[in-house]
Image (cartoon, rainbow, N blue to C red; front, side, top):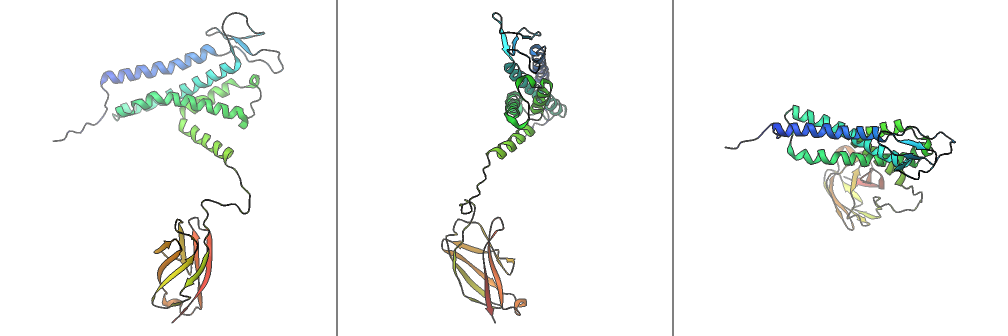
Length: 280
């Protein structure tokens, strides 16, 4: 008899430890953000070294470079705030996920590594998103013009919705690194060049299976579509030196003198067209 274990795979103690860890790691970035939040940003045009005297919960802008005591630059503070906000957003996502799965008795231990890795990947995504924004997608100006509340909010949302933020970054990467080649004679790796030298036989017999051979260029590795009179030919063989197939001409085409034979690539682009004749 096979016993199948269903429901939560966590014991009561495991659930308690999970809740305690989530609460702790959710509060830590909140405390850290509050502890390093600067008292003010340099005003536009203000002569300032943009250096802050660093004391926990009391980070003050210095008028000149301090000679003693720990200090942080404005950029360092921004990096830390963005990273912690991304971590916080991810912890909110983790807390929601954990309580939902435990409450529904569907938690699986195999997902435990995800709960540990997720906050750090969200932190990285938040930092990358910040770099992208500062690179020029949004006009944030100089460091002393940065809206800290806006950056922290955006970073927290990036951590909360890491998958969507990653998709957005993928779109940005595609736009930036997708070159446009306007050469009229360029070679495209997915473009098929079919050089047809002949079609045999030249005439098809109505109401009879005709064995056709389209001889020509190297089409052995290409994905092609073949049509006669705008109707797909499902079964054909692509050879290194041509295409062969069997075709029965329907009787309703008896009144026509010729019909088109077309070759298309996998994208639907017509590569070759020729009118073929038939007889009774």
